[in-house]
Image 1 (spheres, rainbow, N blue to C red):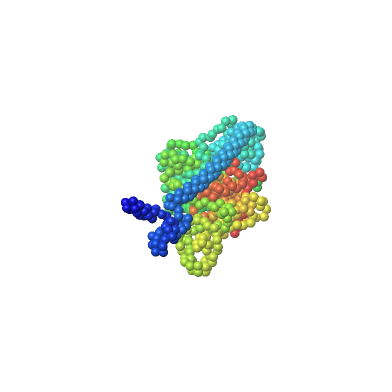
Image 2: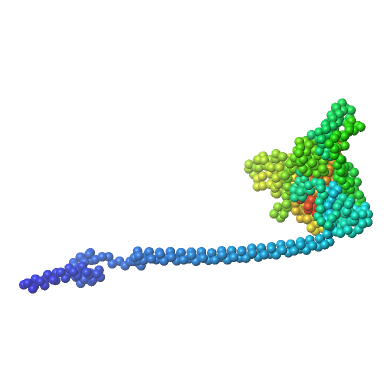
Length: 586
């Protein structure tokens, strides 16, 4: 019995262990072999046997590994792209460095070539022109040929120096003729000193500053009867002058003589007033004050600390007085000596009777394919922009326009009796306050690339051309109705870094302006020149000449012919140094 009971217990344990360890497949097989009731009970206990997809079957660890692989691959691709770009950057930098190095070497080569050429040219000039000349006359002439009476082709101002040849002739010149480095001849001892080494002449005024629109320091005479002395006067000399001026004032007040010269600054005349004889061969125009090359220089009267006896005529000023200046005259300052201004011409004026000059800031417009004609210059003061509130609305003021603003001309519009220029998307300026520089064809006979100037009197514009190509445009001031600028075609015949323009005996229109800058004569006494005494360019103003702002006048002076040689103050057009054509039209 005990044996039978043990076998029964073992069988029960084995049966239960088998149920716990069997797989779902085994349970399913056992269910098939069992009775229907047992099979039903087994099916309820068995887990689902639905087959999962590969993605769902994947474990979390597998997903993380796959994501890690993809991230690693992305980073590797980024690293390789960064390396590629870095390599390209370094290659570009290397090529740029090589290009710059090549450019630097080319620039150094050209600079070395230029220096070598300059050295050789200097050696050639030193051999051909071994002597040095300096002008001691206020204006010292350069003649076309080495003989007296030859045509004047240039001149230097006192203190100006340049190289010359060895003596070439003594005909008509005891100390000998010398050829200048720029052409022409000078006579040693006739306005010039010549030596083997560079020399200077003292006292010489400061030379013009050729890099500045205002080549000198200009001063305005603030009151009538300002006295210009040949030297710094003593107290007794000034007292003697005051006594004469007092007699003149009392005489004029009593009607015994005409009133003192008045000066209308708005009527400054820019035409030489005296002795305008121009030689048939193209000589230099002469002004009224010995300021032309043909007249040499006036030397100061001897100085004295003791007032001389009064002149026979009680209304005559003493001999140490050069001139009685009217308000509105202009002088050029060389230096200040105590309370006195010494002028470029070596005369003296009380500093407190003069004021400094502020010229116009107007600068014209360089013309190019990016900045073509036509161009609108706004010349009116206090001008307005105009805009439309809607496309069909009338134009209404919309802000201030600065004087001398300039714009490309997009369209011309007429509203009622008024004309406007469209200069922006919805921006207009009135034609009443604007001047338009337009493209014109070259005059007959102008060669390809030849420089010439077009002046339009109605528009008050000037355009400089090279052949048919405009290169520069600005606004000018020509002659007023009673002093109309003559139209026509002319050529510049004489150029002066500066020249005096005066007529102190012209009554209410008397004037005297020392060293009018950048003057180019083209027809008798008519000239293109700088005007530093007004700032109304684009409006008629002068007595016949064509006024330019100092900056514009300087630009044109160095662009046109005849060329003024280095060291010279002026030049006259000749066959080998011709003048530029100027076309003036209504």
